[in-house]
Image (cartoon, rainbow, N blue to C red; front, side, top):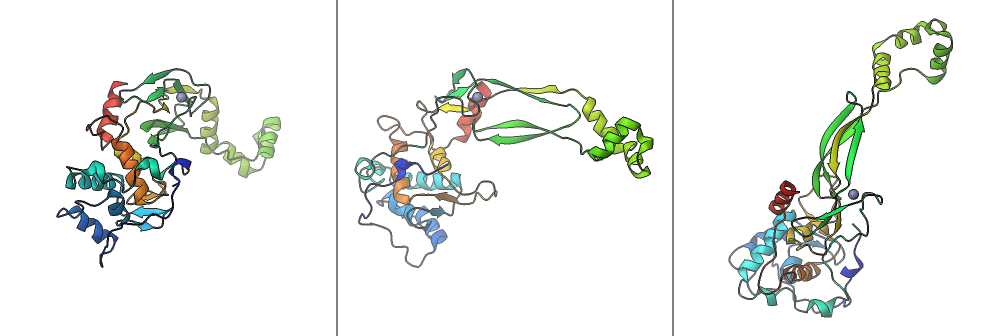
Length: 289
Ligand SMILES: [Zn+2]
């Protein structure tokens, strides 16, 4: 995900009421803050900025998505009487021209323009209901479960396994025109061998529908009360492909994350707190669609 324009601060050099880490390193500071009410009375922006590496535009926290969400939850618990006043020293409106939660909004299905049909899931997200058929040859496929970014669900994927052609095209042409006796023993043996038998089986086998699946790509999240965990996760730019998810990387500092946390909190009126975590909610959704 690219850096949303809305995250670029309007004001640059605020006086920084940062925390003094003393001689603690980032990880020691994280442990320190999680205990003994050490975050009580502190701005969320300041505590977040004291547990991360990097500058204002690229920061990393030594925590995965759940841990960072839990860290903010802990800060809320340590300030249960007045955390609403402690997200940031300035109001969101004064600091940013526009600051939005990372909600998705498309005019059409992001998987394919031609997809039709929508439904609104239990969490208020509009999803695509196009049925997708996957056709592969039954004896030549591999199947795996994978996370689908567009729907944020686990989906089964089918891969066609195409056998390698063991015979070069000019030799094959000669065989087809004049028979296998016309080529050298070497190619004749291959032509009569196992590899070629499998290749022919592949060519003769018909493609069949292996699975019908609903697209479910997320089209709009206007009516979605986004969990804090999802906010942290969506804005994470660390490489997920490497499988290293032990830290979170954001293209903005802890104060901006604090303001986004305030936006998250303000999704519901009054003192009702929106969900912190998303996992359980998503599982319920899948059972009901
Ligand atoms: Zn679709």
